Amino acid sequence: MTDVMTEPLPYSFGKPNGNGWIDGTALADPKNSSFQQLLQQIGTAINTSNKRVIAASLALRYGWSSGAPLHYFMNHGTVMDLSLDNISLQFCRSGLYQHYSFHSADSLHKQDVINTQDETQITAMAEQLYSQATQIVEALHSWSRFSRRAIWAMIVSSWSSQCVRMAESIWKNRNAGYVMAEKMLQYRPELYRNKPIFYSLQYNTEQRLFQKRHACCLYYLGPDRSFCTSCPLIDDEERSARSYNYLKEYESNATSH
Image (cartoon, rainbow, N blue to C red; front, side):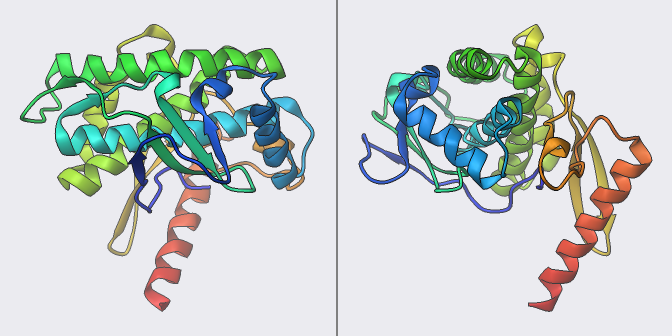
């Protein structure tokens, strides 16, 4: 599992139909059949019935979806209405996040010029993401009893990665994304205290940012019994070595094609 995704996150407008789509409001209701089906798909895909592991996995995947509104924000200077009744998310059969749909194109805050130092813009973006995620955190906590703090840590981890990735893709400025993530997470204490620690590694000409998450995603409780490259339970040296090996393998595969 990488912390910085390499494929663009698509988004569309209008209420979607088709396989894999879940209305945003369903993600706030642990008794909703679509939500239950998604949880079951994730459990099957990662071969576990442990509710806390499944909740951690979904929190990370849900957090990835932030790339869509962040992409729109960085491109257009517009903060979209992210209320759950205005969005749908699409997940594949294994429960991986795929696509984002805004039911309407209503925007709440628009600036002609994007500026990562603009506190008003950053606060507006953070407010929308936080308001949306709060309901999903409660739903996952209610279903799994996984701690709210840990669920927030998963979501914040993904948000941070998406800020960096989108800034690198759109602005060609990775550091601007890091600055934006820092400012965005200052919006609420439960966000800032659960932020990940970024560190940079390089192999040949390829450089990547990796994370040390604030809480464990419990991946080690799965059938593979292994720790991910962001795990806070392993020491820094081992984590860096795992991340470096991933980067080396990624670069080797890229140059061989």
